[in-house]
Length: 145
Image (cartoon, rainbow, N blue to C red; front, side):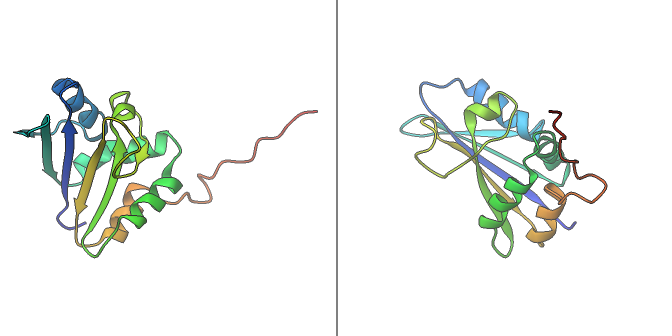
């Protein structure tokens, strides 16, 4: 894939611990460099990195939690010509899991906003949350009576 830029923004409310919010982001994207901007109400945490390395942890989490199909739907709905934008629940990310969120009003603490800029968003989505192949599809559970 060509150049990929991962841009993350998250509001840090006055009632939140900045280090815990950083940890939530790192739980999804691994080690990432942060900038903190002061605001009238709390702070804004900004992180930006390049390349697929930052997305490997996210892709692995989507696979582990068996939510690739849901992720593809969310990613496609937030896709434009050169980027994919989506939101993650901050509290769930802190626990090391993935839960997609809406831009506003779903979580009282606000979401983690993620924008991935790239030349081919469809290809990126296919890499992040691939469709299962016939050999990886799960067999239906048989029930004994």
